[in-house]
Image (tube, rainbow, N blue to C red; front, side, top):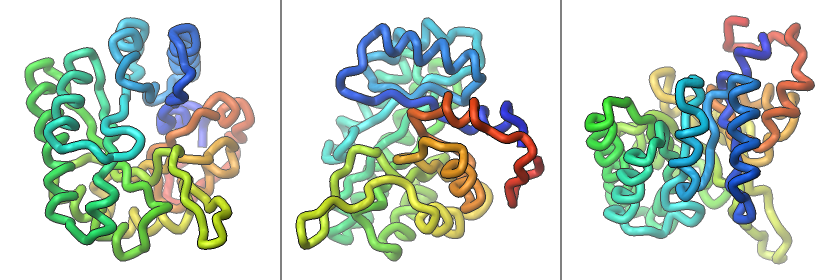
Length: 246
């Protein structure tokens, strides 16, 4: 797979709370240089990123209800609408994780649908098609719940399901930290559930070319990572990835 092909699947990500304008400017410059799919940034930087990336072909992606998802649907909808007005092309929303764990899947679907509706309405006004990705935070969910949440996202009209925020901090019964990012198992399960007509974004802990390959082979077609430059710089174009026409 050529570098330009893998680059077109990477959301170049900087969501750290200490990120400032200088780092966002560098992120955007790197995204243009390496022709990444998008930059994924906090909403406060959307307007500036849109200015920096105008005409480059790199999308502006932002996060909604991030990182906990514990925000009322109407607030997520307004956050989405504002982000689109400021120049966002993609919105990665965190589901109501508590509702999913409670089994309140009607609420999960309604939450997603509110964001999809807001993105569609504002996108139409702006003359742009807005991509909505649904962050499940898979580290907190069992397989059955992941499958049901994927179906909620499908029914609500979202474009992608996404594994993780990268900010969760699950712990075992012994209090020790558990993995919080993307896993091959969860990516494969999500792909199996949504089929070929919906996107799967693997995000969280993907910092090397080898890990990116594992996620692509499991069924991801978008990678969220702060390590995009390293992935491209170390990419071997002779690698064949199953499931992709290289």
